[in-house]
Amino acid sequence: MRVPRAWATAALAAFALLLIGLPWLARATSIDIVELFSVFYGAGALVFGGGHVVLPLLQAQVVPPGWIGNDAFLAGYAAAQVVPGPLFSFAAFLGAAIPLPGGVAGAAVALLGIFLPAFLLVLGALPLWQGALQRPGLRSAVAGVNAGVVGVLLAALVTPVAATALATVSDGVLALATFAALAGTRVPVWVLAAACAAAGALLH
Image 1 (cartoon, rainbow, N blue to C red):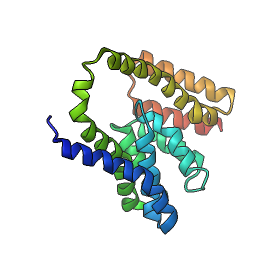
Image 2 (image 1 turned 180 degrees about the horizontal axis):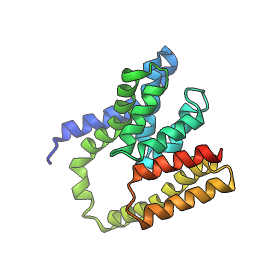
Image 3 (image 1 turned 135 degrees about the vertical axis):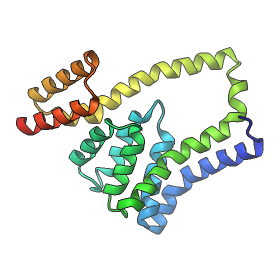
Protein backbone atom coordinates (compact mmCIF):
# COMPACT_ATOMS: atom_id res chain seq x y z
CA MET A 1 0.00 0.00 0.00
CA ARG A 2 1.46 3.37 -1.07
CA VAL A 3 0.64 6.30 1.20
CA PRO A 4 1.43 9.87 0.10
CA ARG A 5 4.03 11.52 2.31
CA ALA A 6 1.67 14.41 3.02
CA TRP A 7 -0.88 11.99 4.47
CA ALA A 8 1.80 10.23 6.51
CA THR A 9 3.09 13.52 7.91
CA ALA A 10 -0.43 14.65 8.78
CA ALA A 11 -1.16 11.33 10.52
CA LEU A 12 2.00 11.53 12.66
CA ALA A 13 1.28 15.17 13.53
CA ALA A 14 -2.29 14.27 14.54
CA PHE A 15 -0.99 11.38 16.67
CA ALA A 16 1.43 13.63 18.57
CA LEU A 17 -1.04 16.50 18.91
CA LEU A 18 -3.75 14.25 20.37
CA LEU A 19 -1.30 12.49 22.71
CA ILE A 20 -0.09 15.79 24.15
CA GLY A 21 -3.27 17.84 23.87
CA LEU A 22 -5.99 15.47 25.04
CA PRO A 23 -4.91 15.27 28.73
CA TRP A 24 -4.70 19.07 28.85
CA LEU A 25 -8.10 19.44 27.16
CA ALA A 26 -9.65 16.92 29.57
CA ARG A 27 -8.37 18.86 32.59
CA ALA A 28 -9.36 22.23 31.13
CA THR A 29 -12.90 21.31 30.14
CA SER A 30 -13.86 18.60 32.68
CA ILE A 31 -16.09 17.06 29.99
CA ASP A 32 -16.71 13.39 30.72
CA ILE A 33 -16.49 12.16 27.11
CA VAL A 34 -13.23 14.05 26.52
CA GLU A 35 -11.75 12.54 29.69
CA LEU A 36 -12.81 9.03 28.69
CA PHE A 37 -11.44 9.46 25.17
CA SER A 38 -8.17 10.84 26.57
CA VAL A 39 -7.66 7.83 28.85
CA PHE A 40 -8.24 5.27 26.11
CA TYR A 41 -6.24 7.19 23.52
CA GLY A 42 -3.29 7.39 25.91
CA ALA A 43 -3.45 3.66 26.63
CA GLY A 44 -3.69 2.83 22.93
CA ALA A 45 -0.78 5.15 22.09
CA LEU A 46 1.62 3.83 24.74
CA VAL A 47 1.00 0.10 24.43
CA PHE A 48 3.50 -2.08 22.55
CA GLY A 49 3.54 -5.81 22.00
CA GLY A 50 -0.09 -6.80 21.84
CA GLY A 51 -3.43 -6.09 23.36
CA HIS A 52 -2.71 -7.73 26.71
CA VAL A 53 -0.02 -5.15 27.52
CA VAL A 54 -2.70 -2.47 27.64
CA LEU A 55 -4.27 -4.13 30.70
CA PRO A 56 -2.10 -2.54 33.45
CA LEU A 57 -2.25 0.82 31.65
CA LEU A 58 -6.03 0.79 31.62
CA GLN A 59 -6.32 -0.51 35.17
CA ALA A 60 -4.13 2.32 36.48
CA GLN A 61 -6.40 4.85 34.76
CA VAL A 62 -9.90 3.55 35.49
CA VAL A 63 -9.76 1.62 38.78
CA PRO A 64 -8.06 4.07 41.23
CA PRO A 65 -10.46 6.96 40.39
CA GLY A 66 -13.39 4.64 41.17
CA TRP A 67 -14.78 4.57 37.62
CA ILE A 68 -15.05 0.78 37.87
CA GLY A 69 -14.22 -1.75 40.60
CA ASN A 70 -11.18 -3.99 40.24
CA ASP A 71 -13.31 -7.15 40.40
CA ALA A 72 -15.54 -5.91 37.59
CA PHE A 73 -12.45 -4.87 35.61
CA LEU A 74 -10.89 -8.35 35.84
CA ALA A 75 -14.23 -10.07 35.22
CA GLY A 76 -14.70 -8.08 32.03
CA TYR A 77 -11.15 -8.89 30.93
CA ALA A 78 -11.72 -12.60 31.55
CA ALA A 79 -15.02 -12.60 29.68
CA ALA A 80 -13.41 -10.81 26.71
CA GLN A 81 -10.94 -13.68 26.26
CA VAL A 82 -13.65 -16.08 25.09
CA VAL A 83 -14.66 -14.01 22.07
CA PRO A 84 -12.70 -12.96 18.96
CA GLY A 85 -10.92 -9.65 19.26
CA PRO A 86 -10.53 -9.49 23.06
CA LEU A 87 -9.07 -5.96 23.08
CA PHE A 88 -12.00 -4.72 21.00
CA SER A 89 -14.49 -6.42 23.32
CA PHE A 90 -12.77 -5.32 26.53
CA ALA A 91 -12.50 -1.69 25.47
CA ALA A 92 -16.20 -1.70 24.56
CA PHE A 93 -17.05 -3.30 27.91
CA LEU A 94 -15.12 -0.69 29.88
CA GLY A 95 -16.55 2.18 27.87
CA ALA A 96 -20.07 0.90 28.44
CA ALA A 97 -19.53 0.15 32.15
CA ILE A 98 -17.81 3.42 33.09
CA PRO A 99 -20.47 6.11 33.65
CA LEU A 100 -18.64 8.71 31.50
CA PRO A 101 -21.23 8.60 29.83
CA GLY A 102 -21.55 4.79 29.73
CA GLY A 103 -23.71 2.64 27.50
CA VAL A 104 -23.38 2.58 23.72
CA ALA A 105 -21.91 6.09 23.56
CA GLY A 106 -19.21 5.21 26.10
CA ALA A 107 -18.35 1.99 24.26
CA ALA A 108 -18.00 3.88 20.96
CA VAL A 109 -15.76 6.55 22.52
CA ALA A 110 -13.54 3.92 24.17
CA LEU A 111 -13.18 1.93 20.95
CA LEU A 112 -12.29 4.99 18.92
CA GLY A 113 -9.81 6.12 21.55
CA ILE A 114 -7.96 2.85 21.88
CA PHE A 115 -7.66 2.07 18.15
CA LEU A 116 -7.10 5.56 16.67
CA PRO A 117 -3.42 5.81 17.77
CA ALA A 118 -2.48 2.59 15.98
CA PHE A 119 -4.31 3.70 12.84
CA LEU A 120 -2.48 7.04 12.80
CA LEU A 121 0.92 5.45 13.48
CA VAL A 122 0.53 2.83 10.76
CA LEU A 123 -0.60 5.44 8.27
CA GLY A 124 2.31 7.68 9.21
CA ALA A 125 4.99 4.97 9.22
CA LEU A 126 4.09 3.13 6.01
CA PRO A 127 6.16 5.30 3.64
CA LEU A 128 9.27 4.77 5.79
CA TRP A 129 8.88 1.27 7.17
CA GLN A 130 9.72 -0.93 4.16
CA GLY A 131 12.84 1.01 3.32
CA ALA A 132 13.96 1.20 6.93
CA LEU A 133 13.73 -2.59 7.37
CA GLN A 134 16.33 -3.04 4.65
CA ARG A 135 18.94 -1.84 7.15
CA PRO A 136 20.46 -4.77 9.10
CA GLY A 137 20.85 -2.73 12.29
CA LEU A 138 17.18 -1.82 12.39
CA ARG A 139 16.10 -5.40 11.65
CA SER A 140 18.20 -6.57 14.60
CA ALA A 141 16.68 -3.89 16.82
CA VAL A 142 13.15 -4.94 15.86
CA ALA A 143 14.04 -8.58 16.62
CA GLY A 144 15.31 -7.54 20.05
CA VAL A 145 12.15 -5.56 20.78
CA ASN A 146 9.99 -8.53 19.75
CA ALA A 147 11.91 -10.73 22.20
CA GLY A 148 11.45 -8.16 24.96
CA VAL A 149 7.71 -8.13 24.35
CA VAL A 150 7.53 -11.65 25.80
CA GLY A 151 8.70 -10.26 29.13
CA VAL A 152 6.26 -7.37 28.92
CA LEU A 153 3.38 -9.77 28.29
CA LEU A 154 4.47 -11.88 31.28
CA ALA A 155 4.55 -8.77 33.47
CA ALA A 156 1.04 -7.88 32.29
CA LEU A 157 -0.10 -11.36 33.31
CA VAL A 158 1.46 -11.08 36.77
CA THR A 159 0.21 -7.52 37.41
CA PRO A 160 -2.68 -6.99 37.68
CA VAL A 161 -4.15 -10.42 36.85
CA ALA A 162 -2.23 -12.86 39.05
CA ALA A 163 -1.49 -10.33 41.80
CA THR A 164 -5.15 -9.58 42.43
CA ALA A 165 -7.05 -12.63 41.17
CA LEU A 166 -5.04 -15.40 42.88
CA ALA A 167 -5.87 -14.74 46.52
CA THR A 168 -5.71 -18.32 47.88
CA VAL A 169 -4.00 -21.63 47.18
CA SER A 170 -7.22 -22.97 45.68
CA ASP A 171 -7.22 -20.07 43.22
CA GLY A 172 -3.71 -21.03 42.12
CA VAL A 173 -4.66 -24.69 41.72
CA LEU A 174 -7.70 -23.71 39.66
CA ALA A 175 -5.57 -21.46 37.44
CA LEU A 176 -2.98 -24.21 36.85
CA ALA A 177 -5.66 -26.80 36.11
CA THR A 178 -7.32 -24.48 33.63
CA PHE A 179 -4.00 -23.76 31.92
CA ALA A 180 -3.29 -27.48 31.65
CA ALA A 181 -6.73 -28.08 30.15
CA LEU A 182 -6.26 -25.23 27.72
CA ALA A 183 -2.82 -26.42 26.63
CA GLY A 184 -3.44 -30.15 26.58
CA THR A 185 -7.03 -30.54 25.41
CA ARG A 186 -9.37 -29.14 22.82
CA VAL A 187 -11.99 -27.94 25.28
CA PRO A 188 -13.44 -24.65 24.00
CA VAL A 189 -12.26 -21.56 25.83
CA TRP A 190 -15.81 -20.49 26.66
CA VAL A 191 -16.46 -23.84 28.36
CA LEU A 192 -13.33 -23.42 30.50
CA ALA A 193 -14.32 -19.85 31.36
CA ALA A 194 -17.79 -20.97 32.45
CA ALA A 195 -16.33 -23.84 34.48
CA CYS A 196 -13.88 -21.49 36.20
CA ALA A 197 -16.67 -19.07 37.03
CA ALA A 198 -18.70 -21.88 38.60
CA ALA A 199 -15.67 -23.22 40.49
CA GLY A 200 -14.79 -19.74 41.74
CA ALA A 201 -18.32 -19.23 43.03
CA LEU A 202 -18.10 -22.51 44.92
CA LEU A 203 -14.64 -21.79 46.34
CA HIS A 204 -15.49 -18.30 47.56
